[in-house]
Image (tube, rainbow, N blue to C red; front, side, top):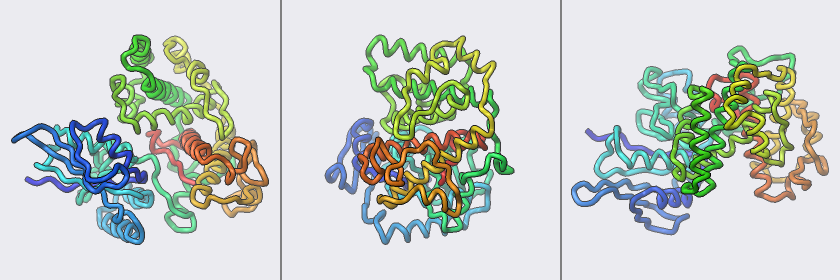
Length: 426
């Protein structure tokens, strides 16, 4: 019986990155063009009668305008015909993030149970922060069902959503709904009716899980054959076991922590490393560490030590007696990080100067709290320079940092249960 065709849809457009991953992971690769401009990448497993191939098909014209907007409109129309479940609105919103697509061809058909070609496709999808589309479903980067023509009973509660859930103007109905999830609120207003703010104990457990995830990601920078690196990794796994936080890991996090040294995919390592900037917000909430300025990365070793990395007694003490900052403090930080994240995202869409101070005071969804932000000529400053004059890489780093910190404080404020599903909307 033939399997359904599979396409990748993603927010990250990186054909050269796909080729780099294939060269690192595939047993053999045949490419019909340069790394950044190819149409077919053929990977073969085995030889002779046992030979199996997967062809990754790349067509820039397909994801270029005006075709792309038409395709995404058709996709939303297609999904609108699926059964109404709690996930439908989120799926329709997710399509607004897609900027890239790949098609696939398996010869012979893939085995859904154990096929290295599927594992390779999953790695590509994770790297691109994407999803897998089949005629009957939308699946996560591990093949688990996010949304199905079969309705809610086919949806997998463990399926992981991409990091970014939507990118639309708040002037639209969909954008307004997104904005409502993260908009600034007076500390007295409280979270929404469906909020699930985590307890102090849960925050402590999540923080320690992120210590393990980020620690494992940083180890990937070192020689995996070095004795001291292997010992540190063994100590990290033993520490996780001793303090009993195994249930806190999400599936992708568990995979990162347990992956042998030297075998993390580049995007896995990058995503896990960025969680350092989420972790600092949780460490702050637990009264263990201060959050650096918006254009500075956290100093990881002091932060880790403040939470008891590789010190089982200190970590267990944190789990036993966690102390969380007040709801008012968390609300104030949430509003400030919203303002920062909004300006950085706005600059990516429209990279020019604005009077951010005036906008923060008068915007319809404000006023925005920009206390503590460094301004130059009324606009956000990055490393001492007005944002439109700042180094492009520094702006990109600040944007990624803001997103991680914003997600962390939104989770502290209102959940949900699964950390990675916390809002990063602006």
